[in-house]
Image (tube, rainbow, N blue to C red; front, side, top):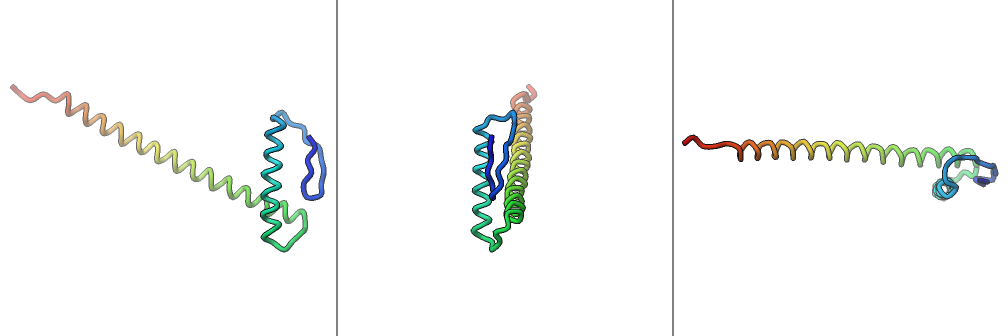
Length: 97
């Protein structure tokens, strides 16, 4: 697949679905445009590096969020299990006759 970014053109060969690669390139182009509109440089290398940093920041934040959600999910599961254990214990208790 031919890719054109920041005035550079090259061909990428991959086992990935071409549509997936196109989506990645489109996303990167969007990030480059965001950076381009917020900085004064037109240097393609600087734009590429800043865009890569922006995208990496998003990735790290998303990973952190996923880890927190997993931890929260595990806590909910542990609490639920303790409640179920207490209920089971209470229901199986028989008063002396």
